[in-house]
Amino acid sequence: MNIKLEDVKSLSFKQIAAVVATGSVVGLISGCSQFWVKHDVPQGAVTVGFPEKVSVAESPMYRDEFDRWQLGVKDTWDARFDAASSKVDIINGVAGALVQPENLAALGFNPYGGAGASFILLVNMVLGQRKLRTEKEDSYNAGLVKGQEVTDGSNQS
Image (cartoon, rainbow, N blue to C red):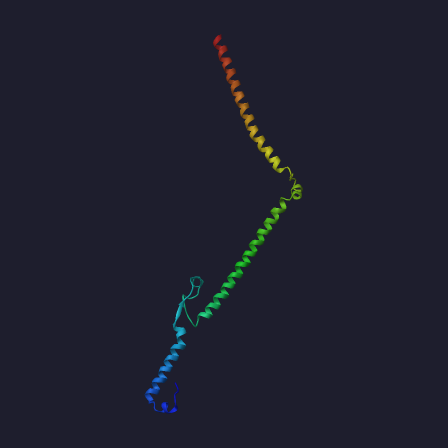
């Protein structure tokens, strides 16, 4: 489609004005449409203060701002996680050092006989309860026998 100068000269003022107006409207629409068309912002970004809808023109700016915010949150998260992890490492280190045989011996505990001593103590407690119970039963039965003898002796007189 070749347009010649003679064709343009034959156009009337109204036709030229219509072409210029149409071009202006098309240019305005195409230039401003990115400000008119908006899209939803993800809910996670809205909850931290970003608008619910942004235009296509503003979207890259908000996206960059959201990325910076996320990096800040990630850095804060990582710093807090590292601090908590170092506390756990310290606690585990102290607990691990306490159960080393040489440290237990320094504290006055027998590191190799601890479990055996606990088992012996438990057995003695169980057997001690059994022995105490049999002693009580024997004492009660002896008291019944003695009481029976006293009552039988008083009945015979």
